[in-house]
Length: 86
Image (cartoon, rainbow, N blue to C red; front, side, top):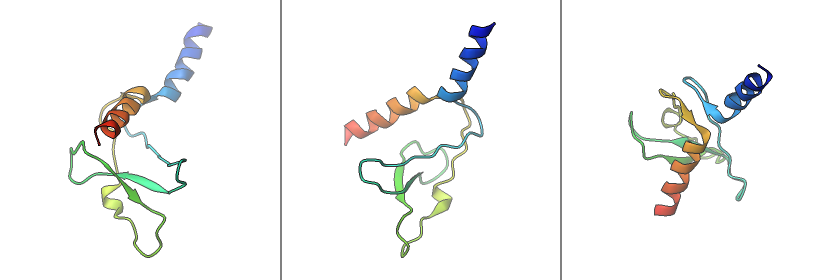
């Protein structure tokens, strides 16, 4: 039973569930950004700069609701694959 409880904690850390919120930060450049997309169901995302005081971000593009459970590893693989294509 102890192993099952330990596995449960690991699942909480490495698995995104419905209604979870995802926060991103760019440590290489120190920029503050939000993940954004245009339109519902659009799988092509971009980073919206939120640090510029003169140009406020369009937060309507930065709100995501996770409709399906997704592992963090799968999310990382999607982002890495998209980054290697450019």
